[in-house]
Length: 346
Ligand SMILES: [Zn+2]
Image 1 (spheres, helix red, strand yellow):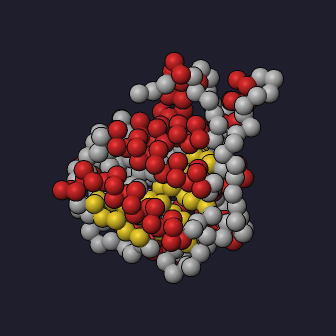
Image 2: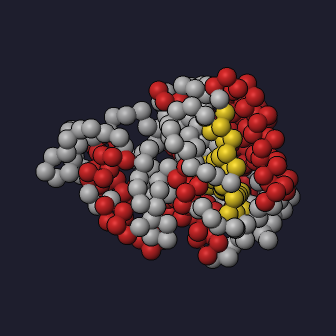
Image 3: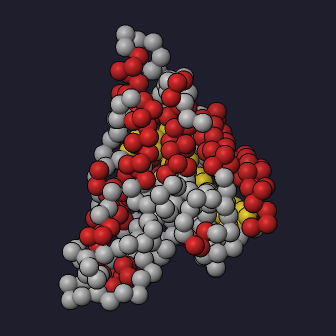
C-alpha cells in the first residue's frame, strides 16, 4: 500500500519562494508539443487541445513565474499492446482509421491528408502517444510524491480494438496496467467525471479484481450504449441540481468498498455550462459546481493519503480550461504549493 504525507516539506528552509517553484515539477506533467497543430491536419472542430497551455498561463499569472513541469516520453508500442490489439494498432497507420475516430466524413487525398491539410492524418498518432506517455509519467510521479496532474490525455472511449469519440489510445487503461504490472500499487481506482461515460476504460479493465472503475456521467447523449463500470452514476438532465450530492455519496461509498491505494482521476470538463460541443447540452453545470467537484475529489484522497494522478479528458471550446485550472490549483495547494493571497482566484 502506497501512502504519502500531506505535510509538505515546502515550508521553512532558507528560501521558501524558490522551493515553491521547484515543487511544482513534482506535480505537473506537460510538453509544449501537447499543443497539437490542428489546422496542419485539416481539423477545424471545437477541440481544446491547448488546455494545458491555458492552465499553465493562468498559474503563471498567479505564481508570478511559469511553474516547473516534467516532460514525458511517448508510450512505446509494447506498452500500448498490453491494452490494444496488434491489428488495431496497425490500423492507426492508416489515415482512414482516424476519419472514423474523429467522426469525419471528408475525403482523404492520395497522401492520406484531409482537405487543406499539410500533414497526413495518421501522423497525429505521435501526439497521442506523447500525451499518453504523460498519463503514465504522472501516475508514477503521483505514487512517488502524492499527487500529480498530466495537463492533457484522458482518451477514455478507446476500446481494445477500436478508437472512438476522438480517442485513439486508452492512456487511462494502459497506465493502470503498467502501474499494477510494476507493482507500484495493488488496488487502482479510476474516477471518471467526464460528461461522457468512461466506457472504453470500463471495457479495457473489465474483470480485474485489482481495479475499480467509477464513472459519473450524463444519462442522455453519446454513447447511447453504455459499458458496465464497477460503479456507474448516470445523471439525468432533470437531476443535474443534485450532481454534487450524487457524486459525493457515490464516490464515498465506492472508496469505502474498494479501499484504493492509487487513484486516476479522469477530469473531463465537458459537463461545464460553457462547453461548446452540441452533444453535451444535457448537463450545464456552473463553475461553482465544477470547483466544488474538484475540491471534493482532491480533498477526499488527500485526506486518505491516497496518491492521485489526473488527466484532462473531454472539454470543448475556449473556456473549459477554467475547470481544469481549478482542479490543478487544488491539487497543487493540497501538495503544499503556496499561492499568494492577493492573487487568489474567486
Ligand atoms: Zn467527454
